[in-house]
Structures are given as structure tokens and as C-alpha cells.
Amino acid sequence: MHQEQVKCLTDLLLEQLPLGVILTDQNGDMVYVNRTAEKIRQVQRENLLGKNVLQCHQERSQPNVAKALAHIFQKPETVYRRMVDDSANGKYYINTYASVADENNQPVGMAVLTEDVTEKRKLELQRASTYQMLEETTNSIRLKYHDLLVTAMESIAKLLEMRDSYTLNHSVNVCRYAQKMYEFRFGIDQGYHTVRTASSLHDIGKVGVPDDILHKPGKLTAEEYAIIRRHPVIAETILKPLDSGSELSRIVRHHHERYDGTGYPDGLSGKEIPMASRLIALADAYDAMRSDRPYRVGLPDEKCVDEIISGNGTQFDPEWVEVFLDLVKTGSF
Image (cartoon, rainbow, N blue to C red; front, side):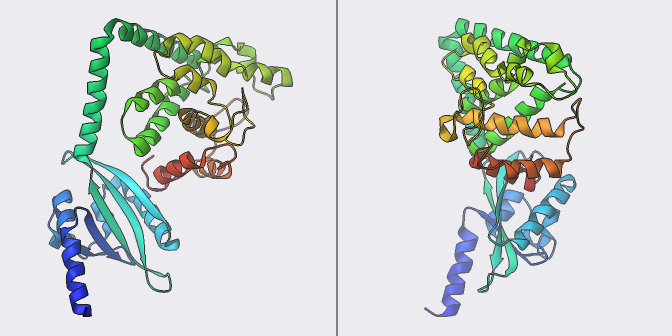
């Protein structure tokens, strides 16, 4: 087959792909936009060609996107995925950014592949809503009782945090981070709601820790640290009646386990630790590092990210570290 025929077929393929395809040069200036990309972004390709790909993003997100693109050109093997909420057009789509390299593996441009996931996301939300409606229909009394208890527990958790200005809103932040990572990896399903509840209540067991230990400004003694380490077990006891067929209490019990098996209370390792516990462990550590404490000031974001990376495979699950880094490096976190 002649090169002209191959090029013709390639051009036809790019135009007919159900994915939006944008190709840029090494400066990030757009040199090709296919028909699907026009449709998804609701813009004519003539208005994009020659412009920098950053102009496809909202101004507030451009610095983070620029950082991610620079990283792609520095490391051609890197691929980034970014969930985009195009509220102006009522769209959700996923952008995949990948370097285009020559035969010497030197970056000469970049491909931006766009998948419209609006209907998929709507279906996920609808399924979650339908599931909840069915549960309420068949188990309305049980669920209303369960929801009331969860709300009460969340209120207690908030009151617990209000005792200490240093941990105020900690559970809210951990919940936000955990939900963001879970949704990025799995979408919105029943597990999403379980993660929300578990992350909101992960520190409820500290209600059983004396204030003089919980708020101690200096280093804890071995005895005091042993008392602190009991809080996941206390939480399990409190939350067990709320399980309602879920693994809520087990997830909270194990949120201080480490991937290498040196955590507590049971020294579980790897996939022995519930998946949601591994997720909450990372979100919990990230917010704890960023927050001020009586014995230190919060760490800058860059240092927090470095600490998460250094704990990859030892303290943290590598799969969740990968999701975390994708969200941080692409400005989605």
C-alpha cells in the first residue's frame, strides 16, 4: 500500500473516531482537530487551529494544566487523565493527554483524546438514585433509622472536632478527598456512598480518648500513644449497629493499617486491608500533613505530595497513590 493511501486511511480514521482528537506541536499549539472534538467542545476547528491547547481550559485551571503538560514533554512515557465538568454546556468528559514522540523517543507534540462521558455519568447517578429509591421502598423504616443514626454520628464527629481548633473540619476534608479519588476511579455507585460515610466518621473513636492526650502539644509517651491507637477499635464498636449490610465499621477499624503490614490495630497488609480503608488512609494522611497541629505548622502542598510518594508501597496502596498523583498533577484535586 502506498504512503498516500495509508495517510488517506489514517485521516479518515481520525475523522470517524468516536473520541475527540486534538494534536499539538511541541509548544502546545493545536495543529489538528477532528470532527468529534468539534462536536464535544461545541466549537469550530478553525477557531482552535494555531491556538495553544491551554485556551481550551478555563482560566483558573490553566496553571495546573500547564504544569501537567510540561511534565508530559519532560517524560514522554507519561499519560494523564483528567475529568472535566463542562457545566456551561452540561457536559462531562475525560481528557487523556499523551506525548507524541519520534523514532528516538523525543517528544515532538502531544495528543489530547476526549471522551464524552455525560450519558455514562448521568446513568451512574441515575443508578445510584434508583438503588437508593428501591432500598427506601423495601426497607424504608430500617434505612430511615440508619440514616438518622448516621446523621447523629456525623454530628458527634463534628462536635468532637470542634473541641480542637487544630482538627476542625478534618473529617470534612478527608471525606472530600476520598470521594474525589473514589469517583475518579469507580464513578458514583453504592461504594461511593459507603466511602462518604466511613470517611466522615473515621475519627469517631477519638470520643473515647481523653482530651489531655488528644490535645497534648508535645510528644506522646508510649502509654499515651497506645491509648490513641485504640480509637479505630472504639469506632468499630460505635459504628457496628450502623453497618446495615455494609462494611462501614470494618472500613473504619482498618483506616490506620499500612500497606506493608506495620500499621494498627491488626497489622493487616496489602489487599487484606479493605479497599476503602486504604483510600481513607491516604486522604487522612494528606489532610493531616497539610493542617496545623499544636506541635508543628502544616506542610506545604509540594512537601505533602512528596511524603505521599515516599510512602508508596509501604504506608499507602500504590493504586490509590497513582490516582492521587493523577488528580494532583492534572489540577483536579
